[in-house]
Image (cartoon, rainbow, N blue to C red; front, side, top):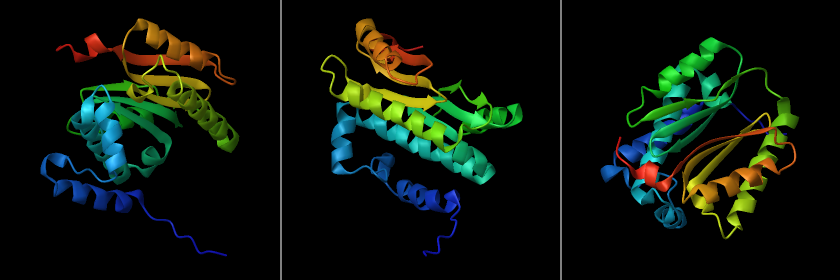
Length: 203
């Protein structure tokens, strides 16, 4: 049998952060291959926005890992244009509040959307079901010619589908939501997707 030893996530994230620190403007973010760069450039937020969000995601994960590894393991994290969507299941309200507090410590956060549930995990069966839902929806949107699937991020927790990103118009967003609602095991769909004109408008 293999001897698999536990490695703290902070030691996995540190080299990535170090690499980013030596790259001008963080443009060379670790994990951004040529294919990834091409895809990111096609997004509504553009290559620069996608890189900024990736760097911000790494910052938040590093903060979680350094303060409470349970948050690193249990909190789902989606970042879009500086807007941070938190999902997952935690045992106490205190942990939920701590997660939000720590996220605000990361430079670049413009909004925190807290959808963390205070409840026990559904275990492997629940995790597999949620993973199936997210994967199936991503696949359906990818092959839907009326949807720019690249502009959406999807997370599923206990049968609730969370959406964040930007939509071309109301019709596209409604199409995405309806596709999610039609999937097996989906209990609810929560959308934090903005329309393109509103997403680009200055506050």
